[in-house]
Length: 261
Image (cartoon, rainbow, N blue to C red; front, side, top):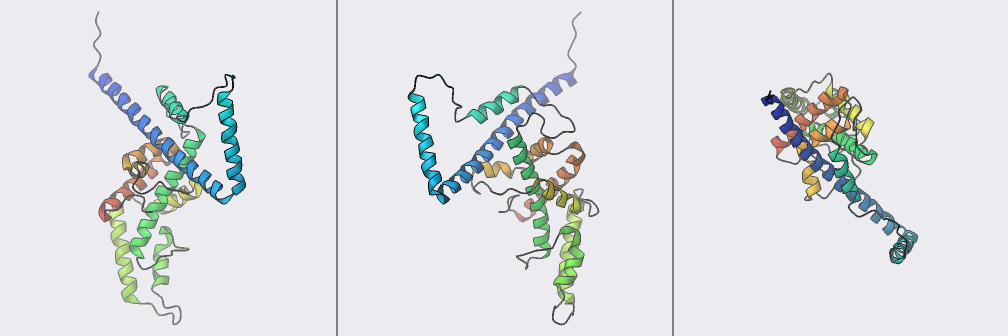
């Protein structure tokens, strides 16, 4: 007896194929980002330490001699990380409560930095909208904005509050909170959650050039969504996606990239 495959099964198969392709592209982007960071770090070391340059040149000479020798030692190719990522890709992805299943520790570390950076970028966008005249916002967080508005509007010499200034900042505060609320932002949850992400994962110490392919990929909300699924535990995923949605909307509103460097 012939058994027909249910249409839903075909849909699931198609989605799985699409996810594999997307995951492959995501891995390629992460490898390029990591190699970019490694290259910059190595260059900084070489320029700051003449002895390191000499050591590096000696290593290169030894490598060339090894290549000319009759030994059959196998050396990793320049694309070894890409090859490894593609090999892992063919094994498929498994999802559980532990982030980054099947992901290398360096890739996971980089992805978590990206999540921390995303939370930081959202907070910075909120604060600079409310306090446009403040280039340095030490001690200011989204959680304590009302208190900081009062401080910013108060003359430190006289203690008098500039009501016009205070009202203007409060209006901007109310405006941006109403906007973010439409996309799931909750003042009782997400300000402290953003701080938690930054403290837990840190932020990106270095960024690709603003006009590079890596930077364009990094500022793609769909790529960031895939990174979130890989990098954070399931208990944090919903709130991370809310932060991403809010950051994307603010980016659309001001016409600037998600990561304003």
